[in-house]
Length: 282
Image (tube, rainbow, N blue to C red):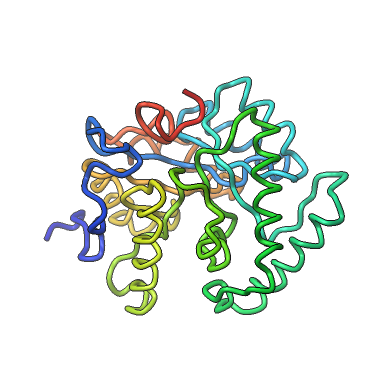
């Protein structure tokens, strides 16, 4: 196996082929390299750094936070510039926008207290929090629609908490939407039990939602073979790379020349998906 070849765990599941589910059965031209920036609207610095990357065309799309300090301005920029934005559900970071309702704050605090108390809690359904989760998800979806003038057609979560048991088992993610899957790992990077659990969650997601073939975080940047492997996969499969340009190392990479040398022939998608089926901007 060559250095850049996919490892044994880097395969799409049985519900997928190289024509990812985000294409709704249509055959894409080739694979796809999507670089998505998280936390759009969290604060001015975060929004401005992501905006710089969008101008350089090194970021395909953004995941927008609502009820945050810069949510209103970020939404205005996105509407004006036609930026492809999905909803970044937030259960664990305090809402920072002014005039948040006490009911919303209290429900989010209850959820955050549970999810952050023990890592194991993310995979255990808490029946006593069912209504809190329903309310907080509905409030964020409604606020996204108000800010962006449309329903969110793409959903993910701050710290990947959209994949917690109360959200998945509660059916709180709209069927047919694009939903971020678990991060893809090679054999040996996580325990067998961890990988099997992630695969089970991804299979469940794929029955109700559209998911990409692979998901990676942008860092670490070393070894170089890791980044090369991501690009190799993007030549055949739909690959999402999650990034946070507010972090200095990621911002330097995305605003310098290295990102284009890395992407090479894969090129960076101008939106989350071709044909507009996953993008709310087309």
